[in-house]
Each structure stands twice: as structure tokens, then as C-alpha cells.
Amino acid sequence: METIIIIVFLVGYLAITLEHNLKIDKLIPALAMMAILWAIIALTHLPVFEVNAELKELEPSHLDEMLLHHLGKTAEILVFLLGAMTIVEIIDYFDGFATIKGYIKTRSKKKLLWLFSILAFVLSAIIDNLTATIVLVTILQKVIQDRETRLWFAGLIIINANAGGAWSPIGDVTTTMLWIADKVSASQLVITVLVPSIMCMVVPTLIAQNFKAFKGNIESMGEIETSKSPYGPIMLYLGLGAIVFVPFFKTITHLPPYVGMMLSLALVATFAEIYSNAKISITTVDGESDAASHHSPVHKSLSKIELPSILFFLGILLAVAALESLGYLFHYAESLNQAIPNTDIVVMLLGIGSAVIDNVPLVAASMGMFSQPMDSPLWHFIAYSAGTGGSMLIIGSAAGVVAMGMEKIDFFWYLRKISVLALAGFLAGAVVFILMRDFVL
Image 1 (cartoon, helix red, strand yellow):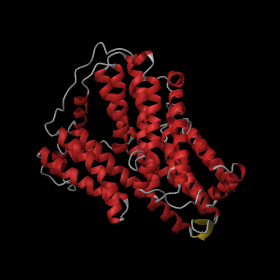
Image 2 (cartoon, rainbow, N blue to C red):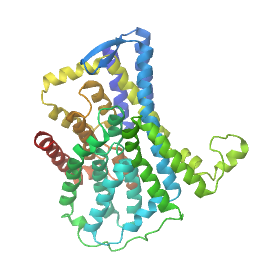
Image 3 (cartoon, rainbow, N blue to C red):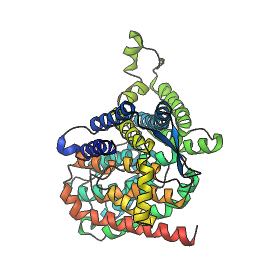
Image 4 (cartoon, rainbow, N blue to C red):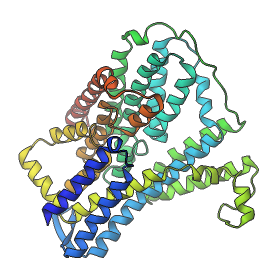
């Protein structure tokens, strides 16, 4: 039966990886794989276990209890992401991100490179690497007319957005997963991973600034537009501040992060309703409210949420949870530790692997494989490696995939031009992390 379960998981995983080739949205195999795995467990009455992190052993449990436990943990992540996505969409509703265009006042390609790199690094730490990439590539398309030059800038934005997302608990889905699962604390994650992430950003940018593509000035710059809404700048700073507030809320109250995110969403939504002059209840469903909701920024923003991504996370996280509940991940971790005693090599291989396959299931699996306590250097290294390793291939991260779609970037062009830069940054940051861990922290 173990063989059947592993085959189901591998087939589903392969379908997710080959999403673009099969032209099937990855949420479909993720949901099917999850449902089939738990159905097999229920129909064959396989024993399920809970990992005791303190004793580092498996304890027998009941199927209903384990499924409810994992659903609760997954729901925490999904509700958190829903809140963050809605705040970002509300900012976009007021054209708040246009405010960022005001910072672009130079024609020098080298200065523009550093400006976009720093913006990608900082923005991704707040609004996540995927959203930061969308925002900056959109601005890039308005600033730089020459497509070849724009592709180079987009490649560096991908690297730096992923580097920025790795050190923040709200910067990448994988770091958010580790944070919500109490594998890392927000403060310790920042202290430990910030410097390696900066190195991962600086090294590729330093190398790239010497390339021909970043020499000279931009000959024809597009028109820099300002926000169409007078409330755009206010909503930008309010929204970003509300998201940054969430880790502080968790630290002070010790409540799960999604509670703080819901409070932040309520605050941002309140101001959004006031500024839009749409005095309606967002919970009313009668015909009159439906007509008015067309003008409500909250309704508009909720309608633009990427539900396919949410369903994908639901499927993949509960699928991995099935393997964890059967004890497979626990036993695989023991076998892996015996085969490769050096965990640094294991984690770096995980980072390289995240360039080929999705880093979300990789991190979900690692959470079930290792039982180290909260804020163990292992978890911080996993956050760094999984967050930055995906930059090595354009399909290796959500930021890369969205940039690929927006700019029609060729897979092999990225492999030839950008992958080496991403690898250099990844290795530089990994070396700095290991040195800091062993000699500084």
C-alpha cells in the first residue's frame, strides 16, 4: 500500500511540475492527489501518527483528529494569504502602486538597475515576492521601451524579489508557512536571514552592472504617471503599514498571524470604504447591495483574489500532510540523515531542487521530516534556500513564472543569461549564512 500512495503522490507532483506542458492548472492535480491520498488512508484503515517533536517519535492518533488538525493548520495559512491578497488588491484599486513610479527620476541604466533591485528587495519583504514582481514589471514596461533591455531588468527583479522575500515572515509563502507553524519567529528570522539575503541581492546586481545591457542611459523613457486617485499614496502607505503590523501583533498577543491580518484588513477596508464614498455593508447580499457593491473597493478587491492559488495550497499542503500522518516523512528524514549526515548539504539541495519543482511542497515536506525546535538554524537555512533557490530557473518561483508571462521571457534565454547570476547570489548568501551561524550568532 505504501507503494501505491507514493505513486499517487509522485504522479500528482509530476503533473504539478509539468503544468505548462500539460496545459492543466496545477490546482487540479493538487486537489485530486490530496483527496485520493486521504481516501486510500480511510478505505484501507491505515494507521496515522502524530510527530512528537520533543521525543522525536511517532504517536498513534485517530484519522478524524489528524485530518482536522492538518486542516486547521492549512486554514491558518490560507486565511492569512487571503487577507494579505485583499489588502494588496485594495491598494491597487486606488492605484497606490503608481506612487512608486515617482521615485524613478534617472535615465542611467546602472542607477535604474540598483533602484529596481532595492525596490524589489524591500517591496517583496512586505507585499510578498510575487506581488512585488507584478508591480515592478508593470512599472518597468512604462519606463523602458526597448524589450531586450527590459528582459535583463526583469531577470534581476526576479532574483532580488525572491531574495527579499526570504528574510521576511510575510515575504514568501514558504517563510509564512514556517512562521505560522512556529518553526521560526519573526524577529529571529530577520536577524538570521537578512544579511545572507542582502548578499544574495548584492552579488548578482554587482556582477550585472558591468554587463553591456546596463551601460549608458535609457534613450526613450515612457511617461511616468502619477496615481489616478488622490488617495493612492495614502492607501499605499496604510496598506503596507497594516501588513508590516501583523508580525508585531503576533509578538504582542501571541495569537496566530491570521488574526492580526484580519484586523489589518478591517482597518484598510474601513478607509477604502470611506474614501470611495460607498456606504454599504459588505456582508449584505440583497439586490440593492449587489448593485452598489460594484463601486465598493472591498467587493472589487475580493473578486480579484487568486482563488486558484488558494486551492492549490489547500491541495498540496493536505497531500503532504497525508504522507506526514502516515509517518513516511519522518522515516525518510531518518534515512536521509544517515545517507547525508551534513544537513547543510541537504538544505542546499532542497534550495536547488526548488528551482525545478515548487518550493511550497518541498518546505511542507521538510516541516514533517525534521523535528528541530523553534528558531533552530536549520529552519532559517530552509527559509533562505527555498526562498532564493527558485531564482535559478524562471519556472522555479512564482515571481519567475509571473514575469515570464508578463514579458514573454524565453526559458532558455533566462537559463543562459540570468541563471548563473542567480546561482552566484544563492551560493554567496548560503556561505554568509553558514559563516554567521558558526562564528557570529
